[in-house]
Length: 169
Image (tube, rainbow, N blue to C red; front, side, top):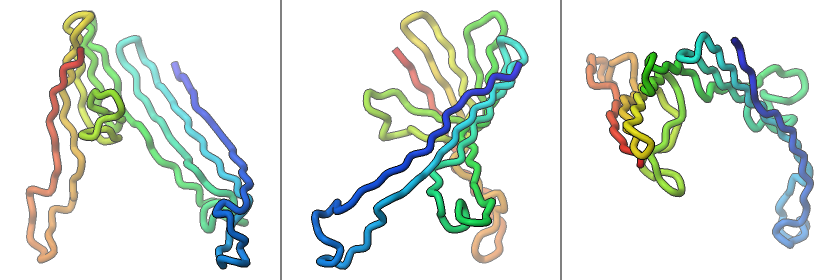
């Protein structure tokens, strides 16, 4: 099965005199009218109740008339991959395994100051009971890929990896 969802928006706004100064007085030129748009589309490729793949894209906050992106005669819309992962439930268990590019946030009340972002990761979620769940993960935040330093020497330690283990009550 293929499930598609998303949100598309076009926003127009007009404002004038935000700084309570006449532009003739403070020499500040103000763009009074603007239009922008954003499209987020999510595709879920579902093979069974235990296996699916997710692709979530965004064409984001493009201002109408922006040079090289949305001006006259251009096709320069940039597509961003928000999520790209495989979601697998271990058969006959509640264990969930996700691998790929996705958003991960450590638990907190108002957003985690430690870890709350999109990155490539492997997440294993194991619910022990209705009250406690354990999440283990491996993340690769960066990898230089070429392994060459400024002097042309080979560098093997060009990755920035992290392991995390979180208990959620």
